[in-house]
Image 1 (cartoon, rainbow, N blue to C red):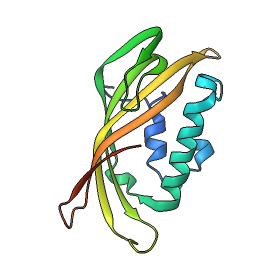
Image 2 (cartoon, one colour; image 1 turned 135 degrees about the horizontal axis):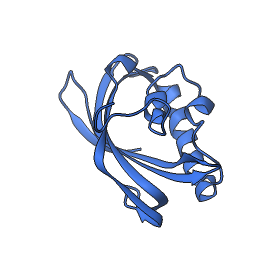
Image 3 (cartoon, helix red, strand yellow; image 1 turned 180 degrees about the vertical axis):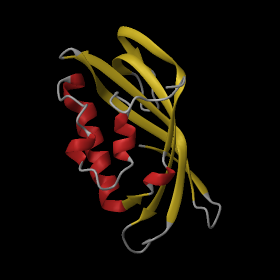
Image 4 (cartoon, rainbow, N blue to C red; image 1 turned 60 degrees about the vertical axis):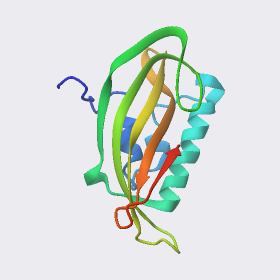
Length: 153
């Protein structure tokens, strides 16, 4: 495995699971404990995954992620994220590329491309690394119109 790559059994598998429309929310969140940050990260991600499943069909074959270095370890510290500081031990960033199609009218079938950075924070609980938060900031492009917008999920 090369520098910046992800072991599928590691905490970064959430990004791949999120990007597969057929994966149920509870399975995508299997590495989010309800104990970290009083469950705030788990609840926020459950809401984001549920919304994504309702509104989009993910083009998983186009999904890409690359770990950005360095990984920051700041035990009992905080990570800087687009949504503000997060309690965490390690903080990782991933460059993420996603392509989606809208599932609902009036935009049914409309495609968009999201290119951005996912800030992931983790905690060590129950003798393993678990996710605490995932914050995605990206530029979303409509490939037909060339229009872009900035989003934070």
